[in-house]
Length: 484
Image 1 (spheres, helix red, strand yellow):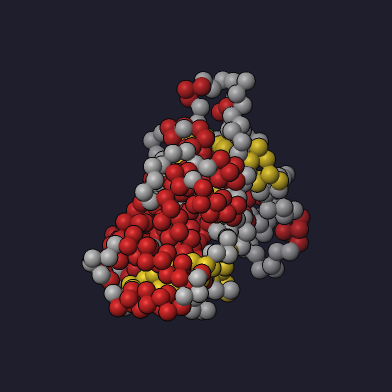
Image 2 (cartoon, rainbow, N blue to C red):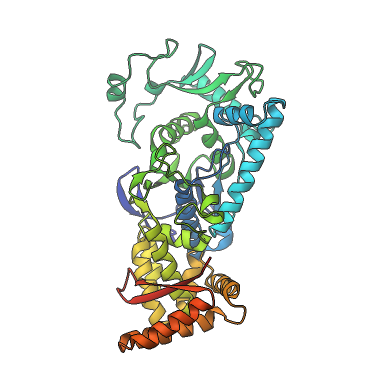
């Protein structure tokens, strides 16, 4: 019997161990082969501001997993939902600040539309595929098919897991015996460690909001509990169930979402549906810091994806999306990452060397070692090392492997040619690479005069060379950029 195992192993935050991935549909004899699907949900952006580089990490990580699942199971057998949160108090505040003269609903629509459009542009520039579904929270507050937030709240109240108090509907965390299992937090410890100042209407300090009333200046929907709006945690529980079912294969997001967001999603979903689990596998990517410090506006190192792509505020230059993507994949997704100019330079150097080897090759099948590393809990560091090996041995497999990672090496090479044309219209990227290779031969022969001559000739054509070492192999490499 085909249990769906294709060699993929993933670390499950819930069990705290690496497990063989066997999709639920393949383990259910009631599901016909033609109907089997792998189903994945990832928490998406709250669209009140442009996405920062930390937001880019889960977008890239789970895009790689999406691509890998499609490779293993077939493109039409993988369903990937990534939501957009378009109802939130931060959105309300931004709308009131930026459009003080407009009716609130119109102001909110402008904020969410512009921010969502920018997020889509950023994700595309980073080489990410569109998910199968991209639900917006506002479309799931009330629906004719009953897969909505108001219906789930009603089910939770009816089964004794939620209650009305103080103008809100709250989830009763004590109604779920194993609440806190994902984050490994015991309920009694949460109660004992709670701050003294707890809302008087709550039964327990850890109870969280499912529905809150809206005043006349806030967005709201009519409900049995008054005109109001949903709590943030509720949104993902409803959208995932509506699109992927009451229980699905993979739920992903950043480490910062484990508690309270994902913990509360689990509580709502399991208690509303009476299921033993919400998702079979929970995956979380590690934190990101910038140049060795936690990213924050007060530190002055808060940088958006758009700024990296379109301005020179980080390292004095713009960075291509392919470089940002490869830089993000140089560290295993579960490990913390230090995002720095040096890291970007290393990624750009590696990408240029890959392009020189593979841009003209016909794509074949990904390298077996690359595929094995990806199937080992997305071990991207090992993948990068294997890419360097393929660069020397199998350019066709290198190109296919880069395609699997979401890096279009041919497009990168074409962009390099365009960039070269800005320095000297008659000098292509291939010609520049040939000159650099000749210079490296002179350096190895210790013919410094000829090496300097080539460097100076390129500089006269508006091309600046930069020498360094390949971080994976230690080999001397040279990159170039158009001199400003």
